[in-house]
Image (tube, rainbow, N blue to C red):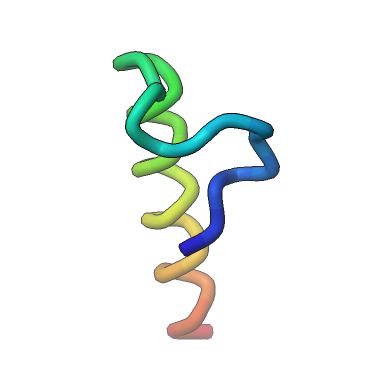
Length: 34
């Protein structure tokens, strides 16, 4: 799974980074419908 271009592994993401990652997944999924 992609890590949003970060240099550290997903388990060290804080709440803000995790939220941005979830938003990124939602955006990329929504684009697949077009």
